[in-house]
Structure formats: C-alpha cells, structure tokens
Image 1 (cartoon, helix red, strand yellow):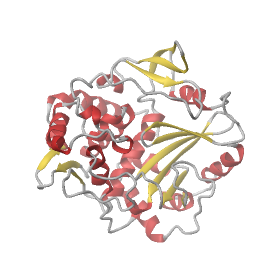
Image 2: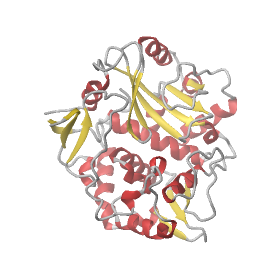
Image 3: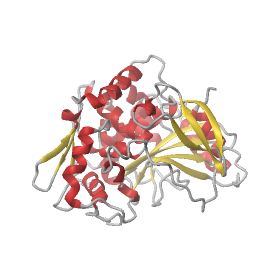
Image 4: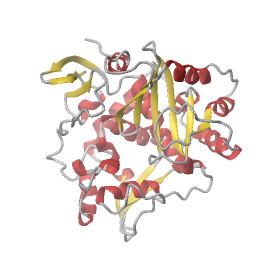
Length: 377
C-alpha cells in the first residue's frame, strides 16, 4: 500500500469531525514542525503570498517576510511586513546565497517567513493545508535574534543545557551557565547561527516533500486508540536505520485534552542517557550534570550525529542531513560540544568516521543524489 505524507496529514487535519472548519487548526508532528489546517480567511491570506510575482529570490524573500508579535509558533494572520528592516532582509539574502543549491530552491519557494521577537524556539516550519484539504505551501518562523549580524546569541548552548537542568525554559535572556555543555556550529558563513537553523528547517520540508519519514507499506488501527494507527515503514527507508520497522501515527485530530505518549524508541536500553535528552520538554526530569561527559560519550557510540537527533525520526533526518549536505559543499560544518573547562567532549568531525554512522551517511548520499527530489508541493 502506497501511503504518502499528503494522505497521512490530510486524514489527520482536513475535514476532521472534531474540528470547526471555520477555525484554523495546528498540530505538532515533531519538535519544530507543524501541520496547519487554515480557516478559509487565513488560507486566502496565506495563499496571497504565493501569488505575488517576483523575478529574483531576493525580491521573493522581501515579499514574504513579516514580523509576528505573538508568542505562539505557526501561522499568524496579523503578521505584518511594516517593521521588517533592510538588515533583516540582508541577513536572509546572505544566507540564501550561501545555501547548497537544492536548499536554495526550497528556501526560494517558501510562502512565508515569520520573524518572531517572542517565541521560545529559535526556528520552526509549518506545512499548510487549505480548507479543500490540499497543500497550500510551507512557511518558516525564526526568532528575531537569529537575524542579527553580530549574533552572539547563546540559545543553542542554553537549549543543550536544559537537558541537565542547568538553564530555565522561561529565561528571557537564554544565557547558558559556566558548567556547559556549550554548542558551537563551526561553519564558514556570514551568519553562521542563522545559516545552521535555515538548513535544518529546510531539511524538515525536504523530509515532508519527499516522504522521508512517512513512507509506509501498511497501516492498521490500534485497538482502544481512536486516533491512532500502527504503520510499518517501507523497507530501507530512513527511519528503519535507527528507529525500527514501525511507528504510530495520528489518523484524525484528537481533542485538546487527549493524553498520549509515543512508545519508547528501540534504542533506549542501548543508549539510556541519550533517551533522557529532553530539550524543551524536560518537565523536571533532567539528567544529572555529573553525567554530561558520559552522555556525549554515548552519542559517539550511537548512530546519531547530534543530541537533538535523538528527539524523533524527523529531527534525526534534519540534523543528519545538515551535517552530510554541508560536508559535500564548500561550507562543511563541525558541530562541537565543550564542557565548562573548554574541553571538547563531542564533535561531528570525529563521529562521522565511526562505523556506526556509515549506513546513515550512505543513505543520505543516495537520497540527495536522486534526480527526482521535490523542493515544493
């Protein structure tokens, strides 16, 4: 049975019996990935961006970029281009010029870029479904600090330290503690932090456009679970490399109070510390800071290229593809973690030499060498 992401997500959101079609709906399918079913009014506004004619990517980025004052991730009908500055647009255009060729195509076919002063995340993407159940396009959101030319933002280190209870999710300054770990994404870019985020988010859209994590041979209802199905991944698909042969997916929009936890990954017993990495959703269940070095030693032993890769199949692809694609470009990235004494405790330049990650790197090589990859809906 050929099951595509469009069929899965459309069944999830379009025409759901529990929804009100006059209102927009939003559903998170990974940490920084949303699917949104827009109301007719919101859908018309979103589509208007796509219909704006442009002759260059730079002009397109100027047309689709706006500032959202909400603290929520996702489509904002009140997003306005009024206060978008030339410096913000310059940052976006500089990053566009540095992107690998295929990622440039994805970036230039976005329908909207929302710049957020107030969100907790540094970046996210949403795929948009209109009232008729068809895709309307894709959008990206970015935290405003990521566009600053002299960006000394320490959000990546702050985010990594959330796993160990060293930083606070509600800290508006997002400053890491001296204890570490500290994250540095070493890449030749005029805007290295923004560059890394954009590549990661474009990988999520590439994933969805090409059914990387939503290619199934079969799906069956789960007894006692009204909104869930158990699906068997297509043989040799990306998630089978690290996540097993099956997963569970939502088949309809659950009510807001629906309680559900995904089953533990198959690798939990082998890499128990990695399974406790929690990032934005720790809820007090953090790893002891005394285990920081041991945690990243397990990362060296695992098929994952960053700690964030362990969050889900989609984050695994986005992070792994970021490292692999850039390694094939003139802007290779070394993702480095150091402790409070500035000692390196992990780096991708070392890990990519390990046998445990070779199957994943070979899969990515074959995937990005395909001549039929989709860069838009």
